[in-house]
Length: 216
Image (cartoon, rainbow, N blue to C red):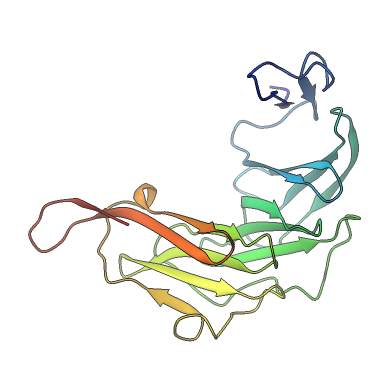
């Protein structure tokens, strides 16, 4: 039950300079129902591992790991009162870390930390936006803006936020774009941000003909 992180070379072999034979242990024990997100801070050459607490609680732990697999620091974080399990985490090109969660299964919440591990309290914690399906978060690493992918009335919906965490009203209609596709299932809906300025969205739709199709 000890969580590990491995470093693999381009030829597919484990990097012997990382941890022990390419594998490093960053904590003694984690619960099986915790969510873990891993990103790489290229600016500072650090590995950032974010783990969530049990799904019935709020917050988790941030680990900063150096290039040879040694944990340099760790800090606890919390989304505040209420159920807000970790969804994902990512960092921008300046080394800022963004941690995303789902507050009371109704609203997106997020935290921002600088490269020194200090929380940016000016970053808006909660977005006043509800969803139908569990949201997915995508960070535009180039500028710190972020996208929330979810659905309204079973239609794919994208919400964009500025680097300060507020809704970007210049995107779509008051910051929101809803596509006119009825899609099947939460797991079929995927999104990626390409080159910082293009959004690729895909899923499975059931048009009026009743035949299930893939939309892109």
